[in-house]
Length: 180
Figure 1 (cartoon, one colour):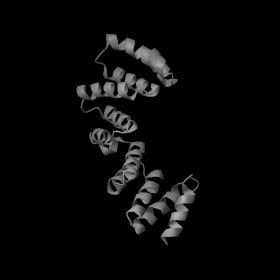
Figure 2 (cartoon, helix red, strand yellow):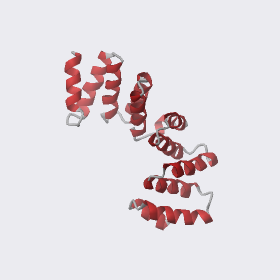
Figure 3 (cartoon, one colour):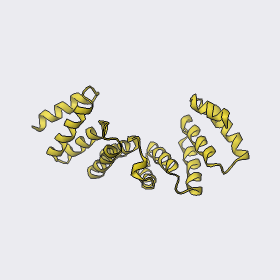
Figure 4 (cartoon, one colour):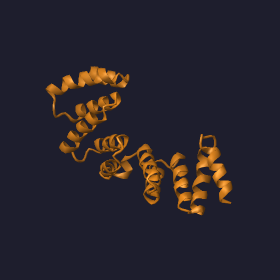
């Protein structure tokens, strides 16, 4: 386990996987080991094995929020929007500290022109991390597309307050000017 954890921390995913697979022959039902093994598969780009391994964890421990969150991210990476949404629905909102999964789901819904769903995930991102600008920026974009201009302006202004030098700041300023 120590060899695998050290390799995982050093982002030597193949080395970590080998160590964890070896340990799994002795501890096949160890949830922490399976979680680390899934992370190593993911790091190697083997999303299918990572998902399979995380699903073993959720089958053994349906209350493992970390596993459900990892599963949501893995399914989203594979483009399985429904699977990601289903996995994320198992995680209490207050457990999510990094809003990236909400942002990524919202962007996926925006790309599918499902703007109300996108807006709801951007709102969840804001609730998870109100001091980060991304949720406001993307929710503002979703609201512009829904012609909710007053709400969009408020979001874009808040984004600029939080992240005035972000890469998207110029676009946010341009949108605010166009909405006046």
